[in-house]
Image (tube, rainbow, N blue to C red):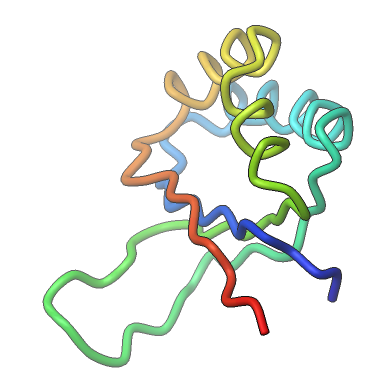
Length: 102
């Protein structure tokens, strides 16, 4: 795996597949534009412990530089595209986590 500074974790439940697919079609080119890398997704995460299990799809992607992660999220092109995600999913969270260095 690359030397990521930021791992983005998204947790969504798809409510309208056709609308969400419009988001997926544009997602990867904008992610790449900001030097982001897709890691994986899982539609059936296995909850092991705690009060708040993740529901729906969990998506992981990373950025080697925090500035790239913020530029991706704040990109007007991404924000316009994300309207399809907002319309086609229940977005529970999009979280940036910093990787330990050392």
